[in-house]
Image 1: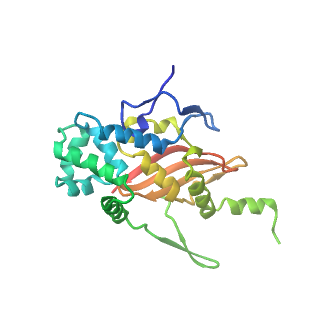
Image 2: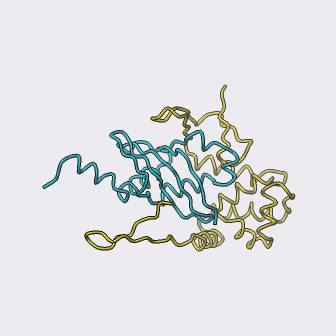
Image 3: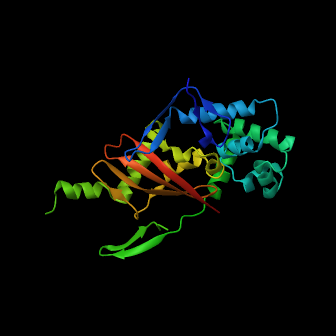
Amino acid sequence: MDQFHYVACGLSNVWLANGYSEGVSSDGKPVFHIEDVKGLHKAIAFSLVEKDTLLNGDEFRFLRSEVKLTRKSLAGVIGYSEETVKKWESGENPIQKTADMTLRNLYLESQNKASTVRELLEKINHLEKRDTELFFKEGGSGWEAEKKCA
Amino acid sequence: MHSSSQNVAKLEDHPRILTRRVNSVASDLEKVAYSQEINDLASARILSMPQIWDCLTEGEVLRCGLEISDDEARGTISHHSHEGLVKVVFALTQDDSWIEVLSASIEVK
């Protein structure tokens, strides 16, 4: 039976037995679709949280992206430098056990709607979003805000 | 008074209205398909799927590069994520039944 190698999740070892479809776009290019893709990411994350061995770099990055923290913010939260986190994720250095366990716990907290940690993660994420640059164009009916294309 | 169907079609393709349409359609991820270009490990290590979803549901369609046909609207939607400016090139069917993510990129802060 065919399986779909779902590397778009950032992990090289995720294969889907079903729940996906492949087709072509209107201009003939191959496309794919995954049913309940957020549910799939949740299942992947929980399998990583529960795995017996230490996370590897890709797995660490996957969980970090699921809790929506930058390397810099996560480094601050777990008490390491951004460069250290970068080296863990690239596989250059092994991930510290305490950091591994903390990230797994952060993910679990992020899934708990009543968690104050979840609230904190959302606040950090919100603060990290850079203000959008505003561009204005004067038209016949006055000034109008428009987004910069480049 | 210009009230032809052609003018109505132009209004529907205005970037702000397209933004609402893309945000709305993408809020149901069952209506989103992805180019095989997205299924690339090296790219996924830079730009995650959650960032692409946030861009589709919270971003704004750029005025430039819009291509409108009878069947679909193609353009770019951008969004400031926690890691940088995400841009997703999309194709939205005119009946809002389907949106395709053709490519995605991020300008890391």
